[in-house]
Image (cartoon, rainbow, N blue to C red):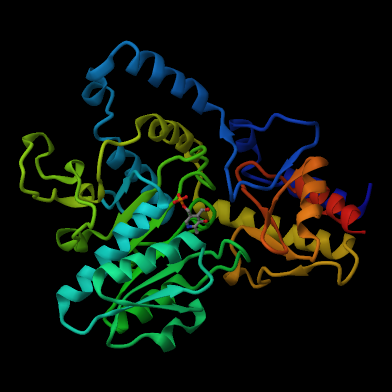
Length: 400
Ligand SMILES: Cc1ncc(COP(=O)(O)O)c(C=O)c1O
C-alpha cells in the first residue's frame, strides 16, 4: 500500500460526511469514480420514489386537485426557501423555475431597470469576460434591449472598469473552466460603491461553498440545480432578488404566474409582491418535485462542512497529481490559495480530449472543456479520498 493510499484511508476514516454517500445511487463498474458532479450531480436515492409518487398518485389519481392539495402551485417559492440557507439567504427571496439562461435574462434586465430608474446616464453593462457562454450571449441581448453597451471585463479588473455609466455587472462566483473562485464580497461592494447593481451566477458555487448572499448585500443572483444540488438533468434553476429590491424589481418576463392575482385573468399586468414576482409561467412540476426530493440530502449538513471537505478533497487531489503525474505533463489552471478555489480542479494538457476519453473508459469520470482542459469536480457529499487517489493514479498512468 502506498503512502498516499494509506493517507486516503485515514482521511476517509475521519470524514464526517462519509455516511452521506449512501444517500446517492452510485452504481456502475466496480471502483468507478464520479468526478463530474459539477456538470450533472449524482442521483439521490430519494428521487425515484418521489417521482413515481408525483406521477402515479399526484398526477395519475389526484389530477388537477394536486395544484392545491399536493402543493404544486406554491412549489417554486417553497423549494426556493429550501435552497435559501444553502446560499446564505433568508426565506422569501428565491423562486425556482426556468433555466439559468432565462433567469440571467430576468435578473440582468431587472438590474439595469433598477439602475436606470435611479437616474439618467446608466448605459453600460459589465460582464465577466471569461463567463460561461450563455451569460455572455444573454447579456448582449439584455444590453441591446435596454439601450446599454456591453463591456466584457476580467472579474479582477471590474473595480477599475466601474464608473458613473455602469448600470449592472454580471459575474460568475466560480469560473466554470478553471474553478477560480471570485471575491464576491469585495466585488459586490465595489459595484455598489459605483452606484450599480451586482448579478451573480452561482452555478458552480451553490452547494459547494458558502455564498452569503444576504451577508454580502448581493442584489440579484441565479443558479442551476443540476450540479452540486443534484436536481437531475434539466432541473429548474432559481432566481434570488434581495428582499428590499423586490418591490422595484420589474421583470422583463411578466407572466401570469407572477401576477398579483393570477386567477383574476385580467388583461392588465399587476406584479405580485415578494419573490413570486420572479415567476413566469406554469412551473415544470415533475423536475421541480424531483429537485425537492434531491434537496433532502442536505438535512443535517452545513455548507461549512461541505466546504471544509471540498478543500481537503481538492488539496489531496493536487497532492496526488503532484506525486504521480510526470512534471510538466499537465498544467494546473485552478488557483492554489483556498480563497480562490471552487470545488473543481482543472488541468491543461494538449491532448485533454483523448486523455479524458481514456479516463472515462477506465471508470474515472471527469469532463473535457474545449480546447485543452481536463475538469475534475469534487462533490463532498459523495466523493471520498480513496476516489481521489485512484483518479490521480489512473490519470498519471494515462498521461505517462
Ligand atoms: C456558469 C453557468 N451559467 C449558466 C449555465 C447554463 O445554464 P442553463 O443551461 O440552465 O441555462 C451553465 C451550465 O453549465 C453554467 O455553468
